[in-house]
Length: 604
Image (cartoon, rainbow, N blue to C red; front, top):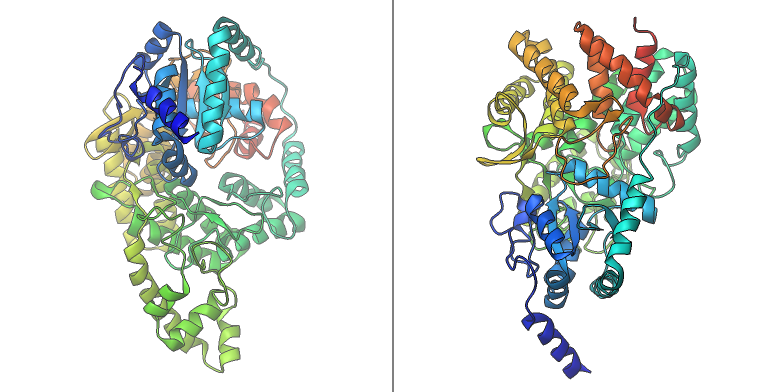
């Protein structure tokens, strides 16, 4: 058997592959694409050339979408994309295309929707096979090398026997899901508000906070909207759910209790086991959410969480020229998931003396055997006041001890840093600009104003060409075409800055970006997230849901309703009516648009 496998492997290697026989990702400015530059897979860049190659050779496109911080993206690369047999099969029978989802958010969203619809769930790495015409045929997420290889063999065999039939099936399936364009009269605002609150309370976890019974995402847009609804009248159930969720997020494993900042999500409903990516947008949105909650719920501790999150962002995510990088990877530089945040007994003993070690174990729940592979994740297990009572010491002394222990652990942790994705994405930097301004106005720290000023300059001078926005920069390299979210979030940030400083040109540029967003992305039947039309089947959306990010459609409508420009206001009211049937069906997933729909109902 080993001899037979060796012969088969040799055949795969020596038989000529069709199409382009080079890997186009070498030295790409995107860190995620560049890390695939040494794969034996002949990765192509997304674009007309790859589509043309697929059509000429009647091969399926294998479009693999991921991002730098993604743990399972790294795993699948190591197991499959660097495997000669897998690579040979991909190269010979498919046109393999690797995309950085952060540079192609609209395409990624289209593929995510397809995989969710056909498989029930989606995630990254996201792997979708498209027909040469560009219609999705079948998709999957992470698969082991064995399963992926078998899947490729079966798919290649089926395609070889009936490619015309499969093309027709994919085309018909795509054409069948075009959403009908419809409008509906707006309900009385209190009715829509009550529908949102009722759905939130029905799905909320009264014991652990958050929504659902599986993994836990921060869902900052939804909680921000629900917080705002507490201002319209008392609701103890909603108030308790919001407060509990915010407490769980700040006190459990979603938050880095030594270095500050939040991870992207936890894999468990108890908020204890994080997926270790740290994303720029997570910090920006949660800093603002905690500042808002501190004010509305009267919780000073929430202000400190916001402050620590902004401090982490300034310390770890701010790059040169004032722009902020995209993320920190889930794996450390030794390719260990969460390695920089976990502590073995040996690492703790080497970093701390006896008294410090005893304190750290008690304070952050690091006593006994680690409850996860790789070591202990520090999560507060006891309040400082209670620990002081148990030890017969003052809180003041333990606070000083905690500071010293934290400093020592951070010095030790610096040797296990997690790699950075240095892209400066326009959209996420727009969100961070708004967060820094909120931090300055709420906390009064002049450093946040200075950082906001420098970030404003980066956005205007490096990402705005005078005619269009760039999606991102990596150093001096321009990357990608700006999407709807880029125009909307950057406009919002510049509007916040203009209102803070009274600098009229920034308010004018914000309005210019909003005008470009309407022109590029809004059509009579709804919205598109990108102005690139490389493949068919991407239908107009009547509304765009809140996900990790707030709906750019809702934010643009909100700006239009508040605008003195009658054209913007008229478009905003039209867009609200188009999206309304979707909003009333799933108000929690469209929470930001619920807010603007309520505003529209009272706008004249």
